[in-house]
Structure formats: C-alpha cells, structure tokens
Image (cartoon, helix red, strand yellow):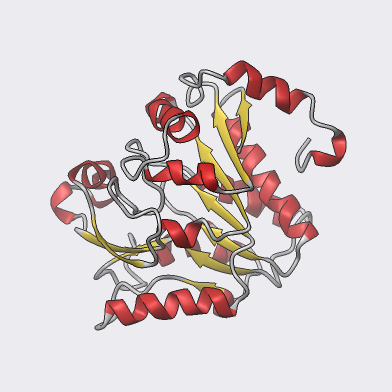
Length: 262
C-alpha cells in the first residue's frame, strides 16, 4: 500500500484525477470502478476539464459503479446514476451502454446482484477502482461487520451512514435504508485501487485502515491484503498516521519511472 500525502484537499483531488487520467491514457480500453458521494466530486470535475482540453479520451472505457440505493429509479436526483451523469458521463465521451450500476429497483435483487458480478467478469474485471472511505472505515456501502469476502449484495445502512447522507436528501427520514453494493471481495479483485480521503474527520479511519489490524470492523483495512493500492490523503486526513514521515520520504524518493503523476 502506497500512501501519498498531499498538502491540501485540492492538491489531493487533483493528484487523484491526474492519476486516473494517466491510467486511462495508458490503458485506453480499461474498466474503471467508480465511486460517488462528496469525496470524488472534484475528481470528476478535473477529469472533465482534462477531457475538454483533449488530454484524456474515455471513448473506449467501461465503468462499473460501486453501489446504488434500493428503490430509487435512475432518474431520481439522488440516484447514483443521476449523480454520475451530472458530474461525469454527460460531459465526456463514455458511451452510455458501457456504464453499469447495481440495480436497486429489480424485483429479484439477489439475482440482479449475481448478474452484476457476472457483468464485471464478462468485461474482464475492473482495472482501476476509485474509492472513498467512510468515517467508520466503510468502503462502498460495506458497513462495519461486513464480510471481508463479500460479493455484490443488498445491505442495510447504519444510523451513522444515514446521518451522513441526510444532507443530500434533506432529512434522515428521506434516506433509503437499503442499498446494493459491491462486496469487499469484489472490490479487492480490482487490479489497481486508488483511494482518496480528505479532511480531519477521515483521519482516524485512514489510520485504522493503513496501520491498524485487518478487521471486519474497519472494512477498508482489507485493502492491506491487496497488492496494488494507492491511498491519497491531504495533511488533515493523514494527521494520525504514525509513519507519515516515512510515507513522505518514500514518495519523494520514487524513481521517475514509478511515478504515474509527477
């Protein structure tokens, strides 16, 4: 696991976007796993800017999103399909038929989850997965206590996640209680993973994920077992890392050929 500590939030967001753009340039037909929420909004805005400048082409890219609310139709303004269309898909040249989401409106959600796993396999697997992290260490909607081997499935949100997401819905009562999410096992099958976390409220989760034990109570800690994870944080999110100085030293002394983003 490589930890990249950037000076501030904007720098961390920009680094993540340029990392992803560089990956797409070097793997034009890649499969991207995408995240939603507040964390990646600026990343998508920067990717749109790079696309408009002609610095990245998404025409051959395939995408799979991490999760979706149960019961929200795609046109609902809080659905993640709507989120992705508004922030990325409508502004770049990813063909709509190459964008995929878990189906939270299916009558048989278990069958839809199996179909989603199969679609990922048919696409050749995810080449690069973008992640954020919850304050309790969740990734996707894999709440604390989730199986580290879990696959795409329905999950019940915790009270803490409902509170965190209420700002998007106007009240806690309006937040759906159930979601469909890629499992931790599904996420960890991505060939490369990049996680972005900013702000002091993510510092404890980042420290637990990177330097704590591997435990289902911190679902993101499963990423310690992955061979190729880059964790991008600003100074605030990295403030509780005991080895922060070492991570900075490693990054500064990387040979140029190892640098995806300079």
